[in-house]
Structure formats: C-alpha cells, structure tokens
Image (cartoon, helix red, strand yellow):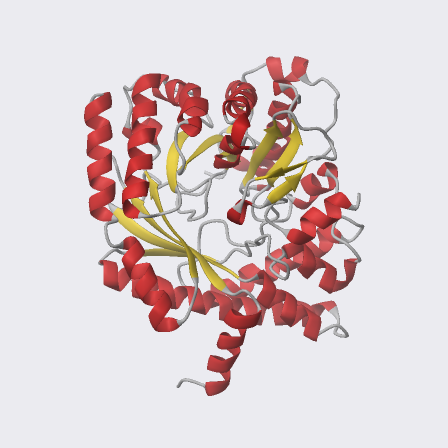
Length: 451
C-alpha cells in the first residue's frame, strides 16, 4: 500500500536534497562486429545507434512522468580491445571516432568501453589500443577509456602500469588546450566490475548479455540531511539511519530501472547504489562525513567515518534491490565534490589521506589534479599503490589522475559540468622509477587461491 508520507518524503528528497538518478546506462555487446578498421567502425556505429535509439527519449519520458531527475543517459560497450581484436592503432582510433559519432547521434553525454583488460598480460590488440588512447581521447568528445591492470586473482601487471603512466602524460599534453580533460576520461582499474554504469570506467563485460540496462542512483544530500537530524545519536543509531535512507534511495533507482527496462525492451541488469557527489553545495560526500562529526574531511576520523558510511549504504541498498552491482558505496572524486575541494584548499585533505580513504570507499583516487610536470614513473607508482589496495583487499580501486599541463600546486583546473574544478595537489617528488622499471607481475596475494 502506498504511504502518503513516503511519497512526500521522496518529493522532498528530490526538491531539496539533490536526489537523482545519476545515470541510466545501456550496455551493448559488440562481439558480433568484427572486421577491418573501416568495416568495424561502421558496424559498431550501426549497432550502437540501433540498440540505443530510444534511450534518451525513454529517460526523458520517465523524468516527466515520475518527477525524478535522470541526469545522464549513457552507453557502455564491450571492451574495444576485445571486440576489435586485430586492429592496429589507426583502426582503434577510427573505432573511437565511430563511438563518438554514435554518442552524438543518440544525444548521450558519454560512451564507455574504449577499454582493455590486461591484468595478467597484454595481447597485440591490447597494446595497440593502449597506445591509441591519447589520440583517441584528444580527437573525441564523449568517448571514455579504461584499462584494468590488476585483479585479486591475477596480481598487478606492472608492464601495463609503467606504460599507462606515460599514456596519461601524453593524453594530458594532447588535450592541454582544454585543461588536459582527456585524462578525466581515462581511468585505470584493479578488479574492474563488468556492470559498472558510471563513467569513465563503464564497459559491457564479456559475461553480460546482448544488451542490458544498468542504473546508477545517487543521493549524498539525502544522506547528509538524515545524518544532521541525528546529531545527538550514537554511531549505531546513525548507521541504522543511513541504512534506512540508502534503502529509500535505492528503491527509487529500482523503480526507474524496471520502468526503463520495460519501455526499452531491454533486460534490467543492476542498480549501482553509489553516493556520487556533484560540485553543487549540499551534494557532497565530504559534507556527510563532516555532519557525522569529524570536523573537516581529511582530519583524523575521516577514514573510520567513511568506512561506516560505505558499509551502511551497501547494507541498506542490498535490502532494497535483488540486483545490486557495479561499484555501490561512496565516491570521493575531488573535483566533483564541493566539500573535498574546500578541504584540499584549506590544507586539511592531502593525497596521502585520500589514498587511505580509498581502502574503505567504492573506487579510488578519483579526479585528482597534480602538477603537469609530474614524471610518468610517479604516476605509474601512484597507480600501483592504488591497485595494491584493491588487489590485497579484494575490492575495486581505480586512479583517474590529471597531470594538469602548465599548472602547479595551488593552481586550479576547471573541467566544467559534473566534472567540476580541481585544485592541483602536492604529490611526492621521490623517484620510484627503479621499482616501476622492474616490470613483470606483482604476484596475486595468497588469499586469491580459493579453488
């Protein structure tokens, strides 16, 4: 039975607390699109535009009928290094441009899956795709790229890690006239999930069906309001309130996912119940942690508060939907969170503290701007550190770092829109090149042997 109080509460969440569906993402398999460079590009354009033809229209219909904002409509595809195996660098760039044209035709904001999975080794196609990333991201507007370089089962591919430090620097240089934004569309993963609807890391895993619909729901402002109402409660009561709030948020996502699935005739995949912030004041994960009582994000107690928040969000969300997946938890992207930006500018939140926080949150070092002259080996070592946290703890971690060309510590770089603006953070200048240049594989941890 529908409760009028629940309806009014949901309306208030939307109108006052920034509750929204952050994305509906259609995953599309491209495994049947093999061919030469030009033929492959034509095939993937045709399939993407055919399968997702009604995605934006249906999203807008649901927004109007239910009054629930759906911020982004997106597409993810089979990792292009797999679907386009046999292509050279030029062929992969042509594929990226075809993906970009498809995204423009559909009216979506991003398309993900310009990706390679190299946690255990690299094929010739993987090497060609990785080499093509700087040019592909510089010459497209909507294409997002990801590379999975580690897993708990396989360890960490340090050859790929070394190469990606250089790729990130080259991408920053080629997109220097637009705040090195190419790097904001490139994420390096360990334990990447196959069903993630959030960019830049979304791709359609090879174990998924032909077409699938995944939804990412977000409501940091809603959780913050709930936490503020319990300013005098103990931590157990606070955890329970966060769980109840996450349940309500996820039910909204489930409703939208099922309705979009029905209207599009596409199977419903998962709800990703992540708390994904925006630059808007009041829509911040950092501000939730501060409402919990830590003083300011980055101070002592931040990691404990984030661990509790992340766990409570997952527990509440799992009760609300039988199909929870993706990343699910709390995101801490610096440029996309007003509270994080303020904490960095105030000198409270450092890169080292962010790394500690990534051990207990959903993703990793996300939308971090560092000086443009940061050496490639330092970027590679940063990736290796973050991958190690994920591999050892059997969780997803990632790095989305922007070496802002021409910028130094204290400067700021503006990406616009949901990507926000990032203060350029200090990063250690110690030289890790001897370690990085050793190459090879960091072996999988002992607890990977579960068979």
